[in-house]
Image 1 (cartoon, rainbow, N blue to C red):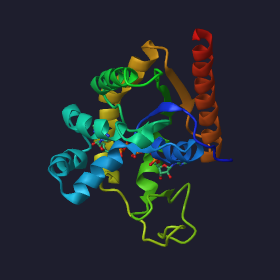
Image 2 (cartoon, helix red, strand yellow):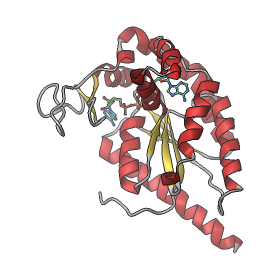
Image 3 (cartoon, rainbow, N blue to C red):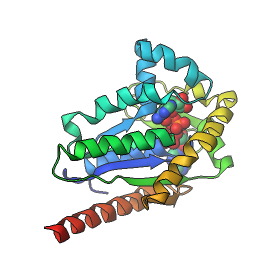
Image 4 (cartoon, helix red, strand yellow):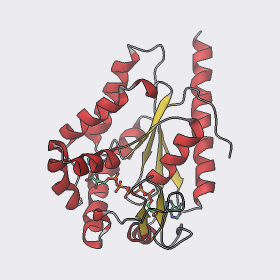
Length: 241
Ligand code: AP5
């Protein structure tokens, strides 16, 4: 599918349980629309590997499969959203993850609205996948420590066993993809993140998709949802003027 030149997309939010494909699809969206991907999981793992104070605090929480406290998340997300290369939009993968974070993001976007000419209503897409498939995806996931490309030993294996197709790095398994951590992560999703979908559904912004389909087909469906959202917003702008 051809990549597009930069146009205003606004915020795209991907919701879904661990292993539903948020990271995989966020990378596709970022490449297709030339917008940055913000993965709060990746940002936290970066802090952990750099040994920052935040990283040290987050590490134990992540190892237990729990969510990092909201107050710690707001600083790192606000820093990112204020970057100039986010002027055309961005795709959020892993944020918001609690109803509190969703309210915080709305207030943040509202504040930005006063500094920009147009209001950005996020398009919120939830990836639905059943439990058995999630377990296979999480236990089979491997990623490249150099370029970040995501593989799966069952569904998207590398061409050469355990090596990245792009740069030959040895693939790694995430610490929290161990079976004993997967369960608490899925529990945290049920209890703390499912209400986020309700938050957006109540505001008429939620689109749920069946994410148990091939990566390219799902990406095409998601691009269609984003394109409709952008066209609708442009239409509303024309009506107003
Ligand atoms: P995070 O890194 O966000 O992990 P997650 O939400 O648990 O999601 P995953 O990265 O596990 O899965 P994914 O949906 O991105 O799937 P992927 O594309 O990789 O968070 C980690 C931790 O950080 C949290 O537990 C928490 O502690 C903390 N954290 C992060 N954000 C936070 C926040 N906002 N607040 C508080 N704490 C926060 O795909 C999975 C596998 O499936 C891959 O192997 C892939 O190849 C395969 N796959 C993908 N799509 C398909 C497909 N269509 N068909 C077959 N296989 C597929």
